[in-house]
Amino acid sequence: MRRWNGWGDETLRFPAPQPALAFLETALGPGTPPRDAALGDLVSQVPSTRLTRGVLLQTDPEVRLRHSLGQSLPDWVALRFGRVPAFPDAVAFPESDADVRDLLRFAAWAGARVVPYGGGTSVVGHLTPPAGEAPVLTVDMGRMSRMARLDETSGLATFGAGVVGPYLEAQLRARGFTLGHYPQSFDYSTLGGWVATRSSGQQSAHYGRIERLFAGGRMESPAGPLDLPVFPASAAGPDLREMVLGSEGRLGIITEATVRVRRMPEHEAFFGVFFPDWTSGMQAVRAMVQAGLPLSMARLNTAEETRTSLLLAGKPRLTALLRRYLSFRHIGEEGCLAILGVTGHPVHCKTARAEALAAARERGGLDVGGTAGRAWRKNRFRAPYLRNSLWEAGFAVDTLETALPWSRIPAALEALEGVLRSGLEPYGEAVHVMSHLSHVYPDGASLYTTYLFRLADPETTMERWRALKGMASRAVVESGGTISHQHGVGTDHAPYLAAEKGPLGMAALGAVMKTFDPEGLMNPGKLVL
Ligand SMILES: Cc1cc2nc3c(=O)[nH]c(=O)nc-3n(C[C@H](O)[C@H](O)[C@H](O)COP(=O)(O)OP(=O)(O)OC[C@H]3O[C@@H](n4cnc5c(N)ncnc54)[C@H](O)[C@@H]3O)c2cc1C
Image 1 (cartoon, rainbow, N blue to C red):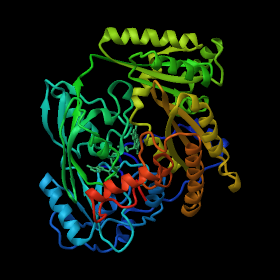
Image 2: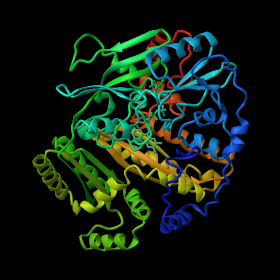
Image 3: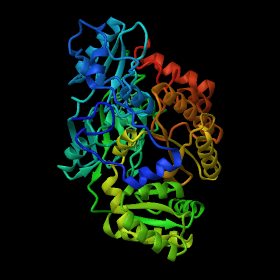
Image 4: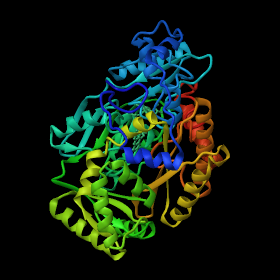
């Protein structure tokens, strides 16, 4: 069963190792574990529904509670402290396009606002039911999850948009294919959610981001259906897929998506390289990607993220051995760990690995072999469970991300981490900050920052989070980065969108919304305020 007020399966626990907790207590002060609200208490807060007459609707209070929020820090604060601001009036589970059309017609008739719901893994406030007089209908796409077609000749697979990562891969693998899209939320997030938020999988260097994988499909909107035919390429004017990608439920409900799939790779491996410092690591991964090395992943941690990850790995004896070896090779506490991946034909993988290691050696990089890579692979979808354990120890964890040209990354990292690190000084509190490059491109990279601070009562925690999020978002904008490389805009980033789209761009977005959704029913307040 999925956990209702945190991440993952409620039967799985990954406790934070004691040395990591001791480190955080030293850095931030002792954490005070908060007392969680009980599920029953929250269920009893769910008000009577304002949608009483529709077919396909579930109005059970627990179902409504479980669809009331996503996974952002404000969402966690609301659920854990029992302060959920609003609940949908009903949740529908359509099984066909016709069901979705009926639901949109019903919503128009009832004057209801519609929140499309994929896996509920949004981290930027995409799913909060809009407050106000109008009732809210959340449409959970989970029952539209079957593979409808696989064109093996063309490498094209068509799925119901509510399919979650593991079921999508299982259906493809049974036929020898893979999509290869692995966001860290893979276990729960859906194909429709990936398209609607422009998500990025961990091996995007090989498979591409979702905008490369999404070949076409169908969206039902209040103004009618939009079919996106599949072409390998087209010069027939602007590409309408681009309107649906990143639409965040504002235009309609994606019911079906065709994706570009590949035969299962024959070989895949991940391996670790330690660099003496951040600058040399960054120069090396940039050189690798600009030389066109066919890596499937290149992830580079700052020294702080390297130190913290080693603590969180919970293997003190192995870490001490590694540190001794590194120091013997003149890599000290400023050492930065990179995890590199190769995917594909074994011969190509071997060549890519050899060339990557040669590029690393030129900048002082040291091959630490497959252990670090295997550990990363084993924990690639488990790491978010640590957020549960850290919360239970009294620490809030939040992340933010951007993408910038290579030339801007050093200054942006300094600015972003700087404002976060000192951000709670007015409250006499410290913030632990660490970052990594998670996706690399020839012209730049994404920068992913994690920050931790002590939990307090809900109001104070939210006040501190707002202060940090505001400062960090402004630092991103001022540094010339996009407000999101992969998590999307939602409500949390909406105030910063105009800075990169400009007034005419925002007006154009508004006009597109008006075309598909003249009455403004679809997910109001997200993406565009
Ligand atoms: C632990 C964790 C790790 C994460 N790691 C990554 C990562 O590695 N890469 C990454 O890109 N993101 C990541 N995310 C963010 C999140 O998983 C992505 O944004 C994901 O694409 C959301 O998919 P979902 O199905 O859960 O959508 P939801 O959260 O349910 O919805 C997100 C938005 O999409 C809209 N939407 C959903 N389905 C549809 C549909 N069928 N039609 C129209 N609109 C729809 C919703 O209305 C909402 O606005 C992570 C989140 C968590 C909690």
